[in-house]
Image (tube, rainbow, N blue to C red; front, side, top):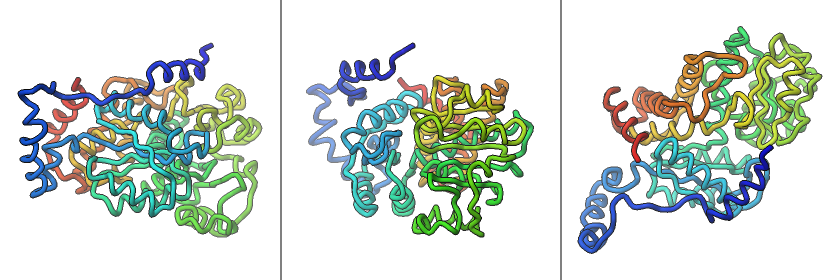
Length: 414
């Protein structure tokens, strides 16, 4: 069996960073006056007159800043901005490899919501999009909402919208495989952090009734009886909508006859017990997506009766990981110069990913495609871009044919 920890350390020590800055054209004495002074003054003046021209004259059209303060890295907790760099570099590599997006890792100091927002706004002028990464709750909610409101470029918190998109995609196909319907599924959300609150928001956006959900954190079920969490707007809304009477029930009771559990909580076995799964409805769906260790061993979950098990890991079937989403999502958003990324865009992408898996045949061990399947990121980009145009979020209103040619050219560029 591979020793991933040892191999990863060896690789990082050998490479001394996984990225470098490249040049599109060679620099020599003849073109130096064009690339730098004095010739560079002309595009500078052009952009000064019309800021939109930055998309035509600089890398803004294809660039994303991948930003974290290191306050919630994977399941490692608050390890600081410098320690976040290996993760940010890896994320930038996935952007580049699958979406051909020029992504730059930026580690920023942790601070208040105002401080983080101001830093990101200050650096945003040089980028076409912002990908927030692993910022602790509850600040991540306000940082995202503020930046969406105050910037006119796509801002995306991958732990929120990215995870929600792929989870909903996997859920759609899991329900189909088990013969259940989204409209009346009883769903447990285990963990009420950035990821699962976004799952809730996305499913509510498409019309699910709050009564279909029971939401838990480490201290129990969410509801109006929880004054300890009511000061966070997103959490307060979930409390008021899903459990307005403040009924305090145990997680064991909630599992009885539930159709699906979506666990995005703490890393480590034990978060979901096999005896709970045995009390769920026929052919239960178990998403144990904590990283790096899921809430229950997938083998144990299957033995307990789970019909479908998904995790966030690539070494088990059904990897419901946001890496299937964000390279194509930003590719599409950038190619129509979108002003943002909406819940509607996220849901259309979720449906497209589900459709792609369905076309090659669904099974209990295949409810989402693999990250390296041909055309995945092209189709995600297309679904994102077309929805942006439809919703009026795109600056470029181009035809479907032109859009397809543009996305294909960019994804296939060397």
